[in-house]
Length: 146
Length: 382
Image (cartoon, rainbow over the protein chains, first blue to last red):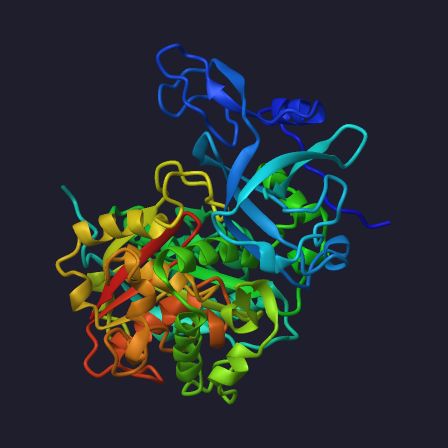
């Protein structure tokens, strides 16, 4: 049975997925007291101060659509079955330069094509929901704010 | 400080046929293109002592060298990041020849992309580790990744599908003049463009490059040697690679300004070392895997200001006789998609005066590699 691709977790990204499994959206931040810069995607070293100390800072889960596409086939079978669906980049409310790729859906368990594309626009406010995609992994999807 | 400026030249070019499907293997096609380029230059294969290609090239130096009968090879280099490496192959050979590490360099690209495996059919190649942040959400193909930047660009600067059509049309019109182009006898109309199927909205079929089987090669030697070769030398005036600060590859969504791509970095270095600037470029071969890469590159390489790339395409600016004729063999959109190597050979043809869409008296040509990934560029002059 074909299914959507699961994230292949690496050492740098593992904490992100541990938090999403608990329903928390957290972003890696430098833990050096004088710096504290957020960074995404996660990586071993702070590009601002070169500190190797990091922490995972809780985000509100609010953001805005920065851009989006509507993929059509040819696609992997599980995606073709839902095409056209939306894929979005969301900029986080508290850190607009931190942007997450995801999907706007009508509910946490709804398919990738569950929202009419005519309702999507750049700048639209969205909020995070958490969608378990395997016993171990939960991805972040997005609901349009009213 | 030592300079590469005009110290080396492209003395030979070669290519196979381009088609959706060619019967021969990638290795055979590579050898045919290289042998043709050496013959064009009038240089014996036994004199070749340097090779450069892309990391994704599947025919390696060992296979090519022993098949064509190269001599002792003292320099070989592979450049990463897909089509971003095209012009860097020339840059690496120029540096090697200029510094005495080698004397006859061959750069090449051979690919059966038209008839070979494609990424969206194979799950295992979908998931390199950084892709954990994009692939599961259905951002599967380069068209999806660039489509995301394209929609943002259209939103910020008022670019429209007509601007993207201008790019597709200019390339198709040049291909219609080029008997070797896959789209030689296939004109494109605005109606065809506007009613074609979506690939990743806002990008339609005609915003995407071709899928082609074919191979190309060129020969780099010292300028002095080139003057004794069979063809008019085409000098390598300036070269650059570009990996901008905090760049993330084709999914460059995570720096302060994702629309300022690697072209800007390569351009600063390219122009710094050149005797002329964007206004002096007679013809340009701009990497066109997707139409939006043209306005982004026009801005990056300084042909217009930030946000003006779409408007630049208006009024036939990219056509023959326009402000900046581009992709005069048809480019990746309409001649062949061989990760940009056909753009290099076409640049050489323009400066030899033998292009099928010759720009009168062209003496300078910019060739660029893939924008949106770590990139490279070369300025050629005759």
